[in-house]
Length: 164
Image (cartoon, rainbow, N blue to C red):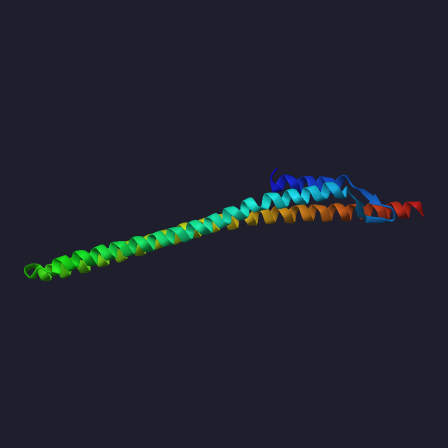
């Protein structure tokens, strides 16, 4: 059962609850059922939290892989440069190639890191949007509940006036 379904069931439980005598804004509900619904919400919440932690872990993993890959590229470029430098005849060309390789490696590493950061930002944005929608749904249910309670109070006040 999803969190939205559980909240809807809680809302129905409150709608079906009877008002207390002389206190229209208070309701008598099945406490055991409400506790079950609250526990269901708690059981369903960790899934979203686990998803957020997984996104965070994936983000860190991507950044670490990009860093290791960049270091590997740089190390290979330096090794290649060292081999070329050992040959005196092509020393100038070797230096130029080494610099080019290091520049390309650094650009590739920077590109990998930027792509990882963009991916992470998108994942975090998606997660934020998901939680924002859920928060809006909770606020709507809360507002509905408040309206229901206000309507019950007005009806109860009118009933009291009619009794007098």
